[in-house]
Length: 71
Image: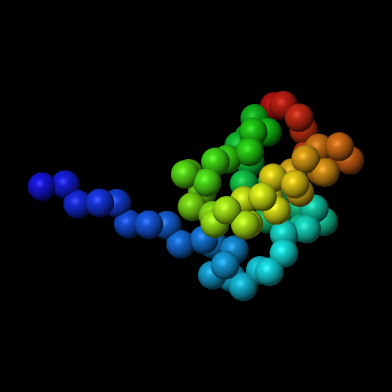
């Protein structure tokens, strides 16, 4: 039969990154598609705490025009 897919471990927890800041552009950019959309937790496998931090950081970076709103 089909076995359940393995639960993805949060990459940010594994690297012991306590807080995702908008200044960490390399990290924040890795959670966006090339068209500028934020990737969902289902795809990235990030925990909910870090997903909220990533989301906030992406929105701040869009406001500061570091990241684009759309591709």
